Amino acid sequence: MAYEFAIIEKKEHLWIITLNRPERMNALHSPAHKELDEIFNNFQKDNEAWVAIVTGSGDRAFSAGNDLKYQAEGGKMESVPSGFAGLTSRYDLNKPIIAAVNGVAMGGGFEIALACDLIIASDNATFALPEPKVGLAALAGGMHRLPRQIGLKRAMGMMLTGRTVKASEGKDLGFVNEVVSQEELLIRAEEWAEMIMECSPVSIRTTKNVALDGLNFSSIEEAMNQKYDSVISLFKSEDFVEGPLAFSQKRKPDWKGK
Image 1 (cartoon, rainbow, N blue to C red):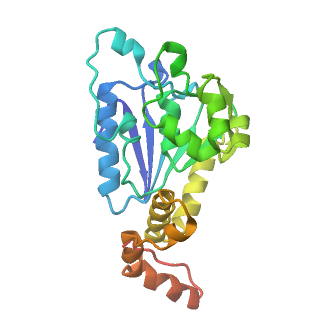
Image 2 (image 1 turned 45 degrees about the vertical axis):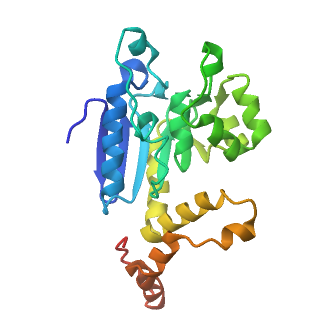
Image 3 (image 1 turned 135 degrees about the vertical axis):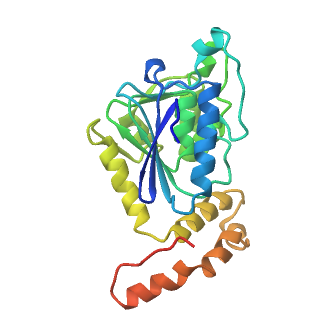
């Protein structure tokens, strides 16, 4: 299906989802949120979809966040349950998502990236939660995800000032995994996706689920003693049998993802 505000490219088990409003620096409005909600619903349900890359159209912006111009022009503001870009409130998505950040990632755009599992940034990428400068607040998860990902003091240094951080500093702070040239960005993001897809999809989903859910507990002992449904599913999966068998036969595993 063709969408107006996003482009989807499917490469076997990989989906590349491109935010496609370059004339607005990929800022998102209600119709875009609805499309992206549907796209991520389909990604979540598709057993053949193992990893997604999210990026922005053009070389100026990943996403400038909320389309305030659309709002000022009288556009109808409607939300979707899955949050900004159909992603920031999607807490049950256990498949890995990589943000390939090209250019500006401001406000909601940064919050999209923070909702992803990895951030690969081009050397011209910039990040900020500037909402306080215009009397707003980062309500799409930024105020919660950033402190958890880089620590409270570092996060406060960004959030209380609204200052802009370059990709290199983002890597030093710890929310960017790798910085590459603009030309290499999507290539490198796909290489990360390939490394993930060399692993069992069931194992990857279990790893993401347990790692994130385990953060809800105050001690490692408490987290380790929990019963995770994803672990039970792993033990019952075909991949759980195929992995050791392929290793013993010295061949590449034929993962089924189930």
